[in-house]
Image 1 (cartoon, helix red, strand yellow):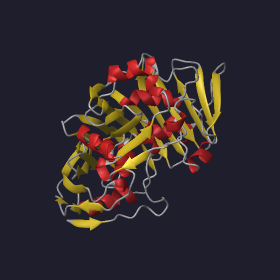
Image 2 (tube, one colour; image 1 turned 90 degrees about the vertical axis):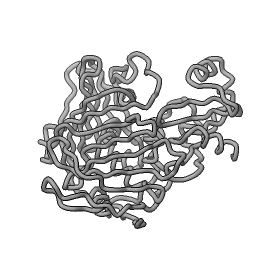
Image 3 (tube, helix red, strand yellow; image 1 turned 180 degrees about the horizontal axis):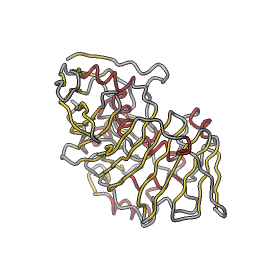
Image 4 (tube, helix red, strand yellow; image 1 turned 45 degrees about the vertical axis):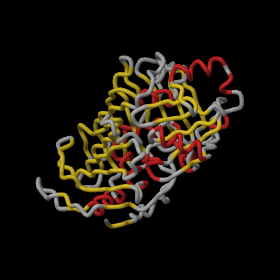
Amino acid sequence: MAQIRPEPPAEEEAPRPSRKALRYGIPLGIAGVTALTVGLMPALAQGDDGLDDVSAEELITRVLDSDAQSVQGTVKLRTDLGLPALPGGLGSGSGDDADPGAAALSLLSGDHTLRVAADGPDRQKATLLDQGGHDYTALHDGGDVWAFSTGSDKVFHGTNADAAAEGDEDHALPEDMRDLTPRELARELLQRSGDTTDVTVDGTVNVAGREAYQLKVTPTQDASTVKDVRIAVAENGVPLKFTLTADDDTKVVDVAFTRVSFAKPSADTFAYKPPAGADVTTRDLSQRRDTGRMPELAKGDVETHGSGWTTVGEVKLPDGALGEDGARSFLDALTKKTDEGRLFSTPLVNALVTDDGRVFFGAVHAGELNRTAAAN
């Protein structure tokens, strides 16, 4: 097995942990806390259907080095994280200020269709179709972010988005929705895969009418809840499909283009002017937003244990959090009692809440959380 360290594109920084995955409660191996070398099996894709033979190493390099700046098409997304149903209305994008963060929550479960377009790093647009009978659109054009629903007069306007991006802020839904396209998921995974990973080329597949290579990414750590990740890669290095399967065969994330073009979108694709009478809420995205809830967690005070796919995060709950009646009732409803505390379990992510107010979580089996908690 060759040990290869793919170099990130020159214009990018070396990989680093993703706060978005942690924020959404998806601490996959994708969002591991260390960037390790990639262990590659020396397999080759067969050059049928007009595609050249390619090794896993070559295909990974092609993905990470792809300079395709333009894409537009339709994306189908299915997520099954095993999370409780969201309260009614949450994540519809039709709240008091059409805040993009609320709409992003709806992507954590069920089937969704998005129309997407991108023209380089400064222009993206995503429309989440049929949100409660309406379409929800978020777009990023330079320093501005706009978000709105066809069923509401509420409009969200984020300013200084370019400054927010430079400061690595989690600024708005256009980037969040872009991160749920096959391309961004695949790049994140491949940059953070390490020597705890086998990567092979598993033939070819047809996605959105295009022949594509299929990369198979498999964790080698037994404690991981991830069975494998399959990525369909177009000849130009752009991923067209991304499927993450848990070890109980649940397809936790399955996202694919059903229609795709790499032609440059027209400039008016990203143009927007609020209609007359719209209720516009404006926020400076370069300023970190204080949610006022669980400040210890908002600061990102997360300690990590282990490495690779079995990385376990640890956070300390605010003093007295477990003593509140509402919090205790909520915890009891979502978790089961164990000798170590309370266990929240899904096909992918498990979380252990200990009696002393610590939370251990990761894409690992419960036994790994118990061992980590006992050792720390």
